[in-house]
Length: 120
Image (cartoon, rainbow, N blue to C red):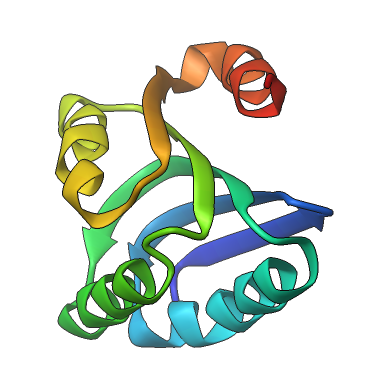
């Protein structure tokens, strides 16, 4: 399991907060919840918030790639909120794996990220 993961889902909006490393078990915990929301509500708007984030284990990276491929068209918008330059780079790295609109936000402007993800 990851060091910490918290998921809030409301309709087509999902907010995933994570700390530490994402593992295979992390994805087994939250991916089914997102799968169900996609089946129920269609395309998701996803806010992915990282604090003291240390990346993925090998198993976590594999699960992430599988999730991205499976849901290539199911994420409408992705706001990535982080604390470091390498996390900012994730917005560019993610683009080939999704049709979503993607934007990075520094953790100091979390409210701006929430407004962007909610806007049409």
